[in-house]
Image 1: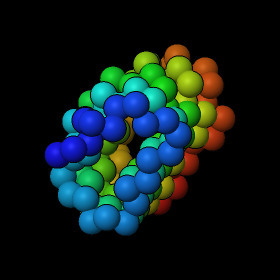
Image 2: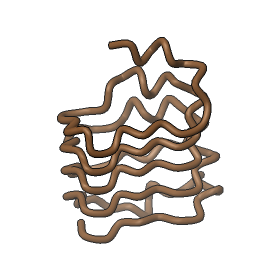
Image 3: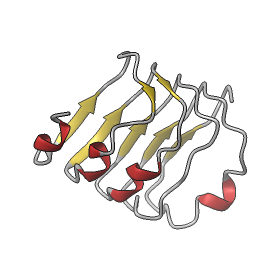
Image 4: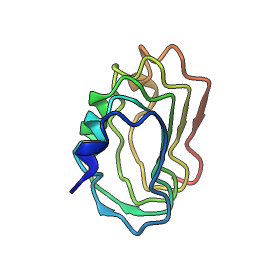
Length: 111
């Protein structure tokens, strides 16, 4: 994949509605200049642990996928909006929110 060559990209990266399956490519976790990442309306099911490598995210949209859990990262100190609407998440969320001091909006409906 050529995603690794985009490591200097800054701003918004939109992969919504692309029929992505499984997990997000590892390279996305290494792209430290992405501020907004849209991955909604795909078929993602696996853990997103590697997204925790990036502290640059201000907005993550993983709505309308098939995630059964979501690992919150304490590296996301700049994260303001997280949308996990319409997944299959069945985990305790509140204990994972410590340290996300910039969080303004968290969407968890229809899980």
